Image 1 (cartoon, rainbow, N blue to C red):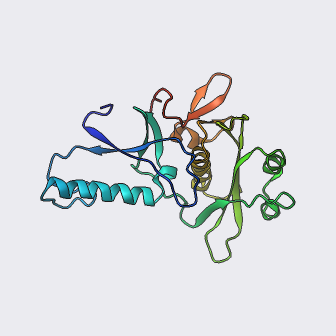
Image 2 (cartoon, one colour):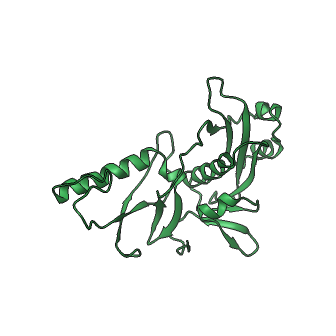
Length: 232
């Protein structure tokens, strides 16, 4: 094993509403038991079967709460290893993130009214290159005000590389919102079949997600499990 004392629990992950284009096999590291306690609840267990059932329960809970999009990724031994330690919620407290409906004539007009520049994502829509466009807004009954957005584009005709073109939040918005926009954009790119994501923007969240400098390309994150392992 690559991690002494750990085993890799792996599974294909397809979230509701997401096309099954993601080629990756995801894994979560599970510590070998040194005491008869549940790895999920911490309570005593009385058999190996009970311990394994709680491992499965923990995996199900982590995946159901969006670990694929919120966890740090490391490519290891043919898996995308997801790190649940201190992984934030998919959306920061008090905010929500969703996709921007790509209507060519008025796409993101509500974002523009909120003071966000929608020039780049509209150009990507016109050029049929838009990979994803996300919007962040206050989580209330009105779903507003809008406070930020992020956009990514397909870099090549084969649609194997995605470029993170834009991440912007309004002044006074917590940095967790910007970080969440980056994480979800990377997740959507991988789920759409991207083998790597490149970025030239300066964002602290990129290093935490596994982006590394690459000569002539800015920052690069490989989402293809066949790529060499990335250092943490």
